[in-house]
Length: 189
Image (cartoon, rainbow, N blue to C red; front, side, top):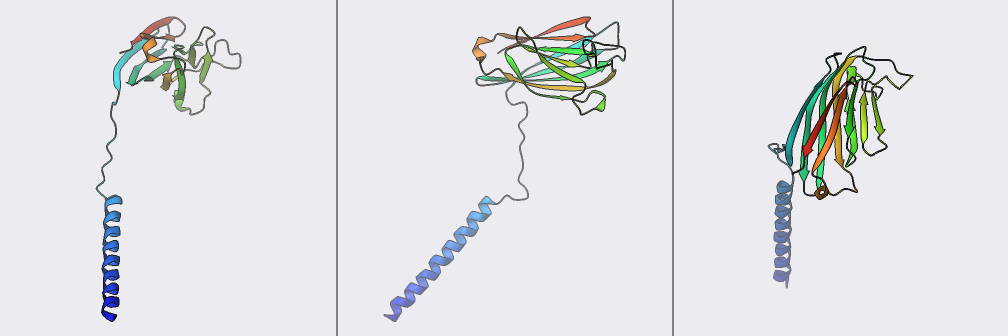
């Protein structure tokens, strides 16, 4: 009877040893190694780039940049990135009209190195869509014309009530100094 108990103890030790080895193997497999490489996603879903360059001949006001169009499945995301220059005497600044099919997700602006929202104004257009105004003093009695430059980034997403199949084009307008307009048409794929 003692031999059976000894074998049981020996069997228990072997089983305990195997469980310990198995746990160590699992930990080694799960824990990241120092050589773990992160692979960033680059241009995933990017279907088109649409450039624009709008310059006023009367002032030093200008906007140039690109629309990045990302389509994945039933959604479209657009990122507008613009380099802005506004003349110090320009009361009108730069306006971006965003079509009604899109919602504004976020706006980042570095106009004159200022991280406040002082130089950016977003307004809903009564006929649908939005305007993003940069350094617009006209029609705002509490603002004075401010010249300078900066970068604007506007992240846009498809309006929840719109299906991508219903859209052939998205029409944007960019206005500088209230004198020069450029329509930017993005064809949907």
